[in-house]
Image (cartoon, rainbow, N blue to C red):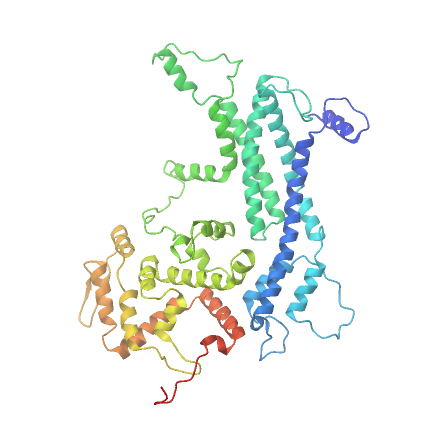
Length: 512
């Protein structure tokens, strides 16, 4: 569009003259404006709702918000997980400054109440989002306008909305239709991206800019591909028409284009919906043809597959899909997730979140095969394994767990798995067994694991110390320590009576 045409359109829009024929497309304009505005409004409402959930959590479990016992109380939150969740949702909220600096420091719940009261629609953070979404608005307007123009021309129906100027030729209408369909696919992908960002409260300026750029790139790429190959079935039809005689081709004249292929009607929105996936797939496939591109070592694809979330108790397909909306796609992602964040950002309770994450940590640390075996032995979580091997009563410096459990669990933790066998077979790894006299290779992983178990010994006292040492490196991860801290704080908030059910005292002998 030339500069004079742009000026003419602006004059028509502003009602100050200009040549008719450049009226704005009302539906496209409404879609362009409402898309970011609705998401920004939903983000504000979601912030308020989740701040209320954080306040309820702190009210129900006050131990998570108590100041440190050995510090001056500079930070009201002793649990870093709670502080991280709180800071995520209070960023960008401006509160009035205190008039009296000597006033008593607010409690964590009072601070949350102040933040809730200070939350306003279209504050500075919302305005920044709205400004950065202007690029997406422009892309949406022109994309929707192109789609409506192309559909109106191809269906030969009167334009029920202000579609602007009449398209000059059939070829122009086809290009508008393909560009519009490509935009439709990219727009749906952007909406899904906005929904994921909204669910995780990660709707930021970069989100709008990213999808605006991806939409432009997708449309340009697909329109160029359509102009280069307007009919993907042309070669097949030429061979069919000539009966396989390459000397008698019946190609169309250069000045004409065939009608839009039905394949492109499907291909354009699909390529628009999956721009990243398509380009990444092409690059990966081309690695085997380009010598200067570093190749991936895909020998171990079979043994490095992700563990699905529904391998855990209590997670079905619907729950798995809901967790994926929050960016949790496998067991490892769930094992490292903040349980308080999971409770705040999903409809699941804190106890359910803690249980799932404790299961995921056990599964991630010992492997899916051994996790399923341990579950049959009534050991479902990382803390069940910890208590079974190294249970200590309050104030006790030594382990109070029976030695027999260490003997039992040593056999499970050191048992060979099919994954271990596949790794050794695929990678050509030969494990070595060392004794006081010689070093010899193990015939197979099963023999090595048997030798490993023999080295742990048979005496319960020796096995106990060695298995507890093994548990030390298994369970000493930051995400396990964080979950242990949350578990302890919630347990302290529930009080001593929560540790057992109240019951009658034993009756003296002879009183029936």
